[in-house]
Length: 186
Image 1 (cartoon, rainbow, N blue to C red):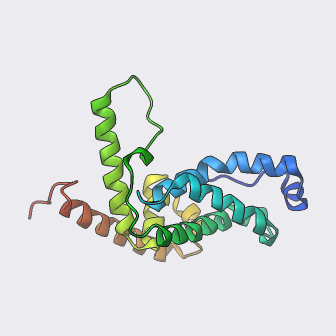
Image 2 (cartoon, rainbow, N blue to C red; image 1 turned 90 degrees about the vertical axis):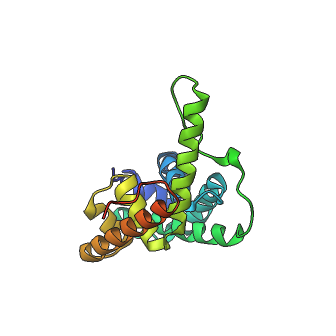
């Protein structure tokens, strides 16, 4: 799943407009998914994504190596989301900001069920500490490999495994309390 910087990294660093546009088109869907998955239901993912690219384009010169780009962009995304969560504290979430990428034949009942489940899962992920939510989204939701997540978060594999175990346990605990998953038999 890991994406790499375009081969024209030197052109991006020089400010070549075409290379930058290509980079933005390539990474826009990835960043949008990160903001949707990590932002929770109260964060406007489109607005956060736009801000990520504004910050990234201003600070692009600080990325020294193309292989560090994905990790750097993910950290920019996390910082922007943190700012957005603080800014929207107390603002009510509106249902029309929900998952909009459903496909297939129209089935309002199934669509409603999927939207409700997606919202509930987002709300549970939003209760997790930021470092645990990031691990859960990157590894379990996006299906990235352990080495990819280690690289993106800049932690050791042992730390990642510990965070993943903790994130799953906390997710399960909250989801069970909310009735999203059945309680385990004892």
